[in-house]
Length: 160
Image 1 (tube, rainbow, N blue to C red):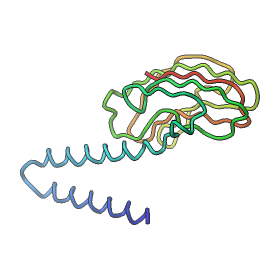
Image 2 (image 1 turned 120 degrees about the horizontal axis):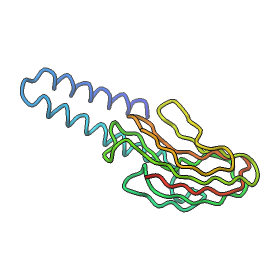
Image 3 (image 1 turned 90 degrees about the vertical axis):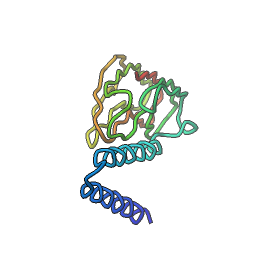
């Protein structure tokens, strides 16, 4: 069912793109509207990839959008992943620069705080540490994730 829905959306997008290319008036407006619509749909769809607030181990306060905010958590034998901040956008309305400030304390087990950028993953921290790092997000998936295996400890995270 999902494959059929995605196929239908792609066919509709291609139809509108072809219709927009063959028309001589308002090409830019139609193309812009299609891109904006697609971007909005992708952003709203991507919010489902974030871990729901009720399922997070800690307390999250969102900033201007799903990419920014604060998160504070205490973990006790945590196994799994939390997609804390991020989304999927063609172009982020508030710019593409993010500053990540964190403190990760591992008492037991293992934990890794990392950044997903498209198909790539970049470790932010996987030991007791605190730091501030800056990232430039690109179009597509951009998420900050905590992965734990029997992880007991704390995480404080601010993304601006």
